[in-house]
Image (cartoon, rainbow, N blue to C red; front, side, top):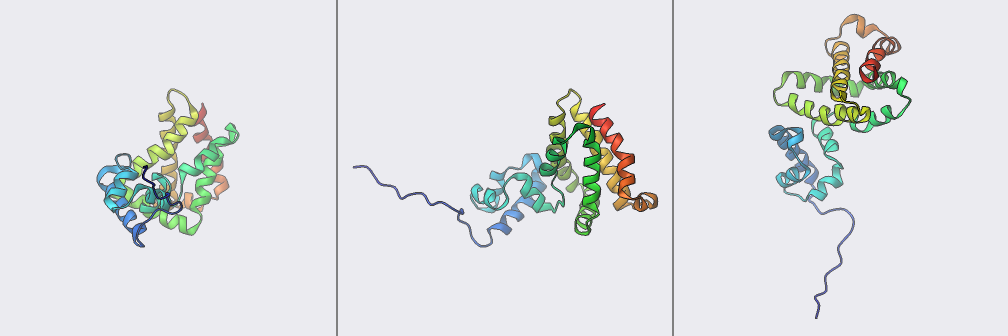
Amino acid sequence: MTESRAPRRRGRPRGGTDSRERIIGAAVDEFGEHGYDGSTIRSIAARAGVDSALVHHYFGTKADLFAEAVGIPLRPDIDVPAILAGPQDEVGERLIRYLLDSFEQPEIRRRGVMLIRTAIGSKLTTPLLAGFLSRELIGRIAKALGVDDAQLRASLVASQVAGLLIARYVVKLPALTAAPIDELVARVAPTVQRYLFD
């Protein structure tokens, strides 16, 4: 006689009402101890005392969870592939315009500046942000380029972008702060384009 099994329930994985908050807390601890690359959905779930399916249910990917845990206001893992998919001769312009337009939104600017300041001044946050950007921004750009020096090219783009955002929104150099976005795009985008494709 074969043993009958109860049908597996479909739908949302089971977890207590505080599961989402426990997952975020566990993610902050796990990312803090092991960095972005050293943390996994499984290790975060174990630390939170939940099934990894529940982490995926609430947050999707590790990048989604990291963005939620540390408050990243932009999602390069989602937005950059779309930017790279357009006409090649406009990639530099689209990338710089996307970043500047995003940072002109008050809430994104507030959270972005806070994250940049924290990353620059914290031994804990710097490797977390560097790991996230290496995997989700630089890695994606490099993969799309498909050339031998793709990592260097993508890292140069990241350095240009970081310098621009810091100078305009954190240090607030007067000429950069006053310059219209169109002018900054016109001046910076060709350099980014050259890093990527020349």
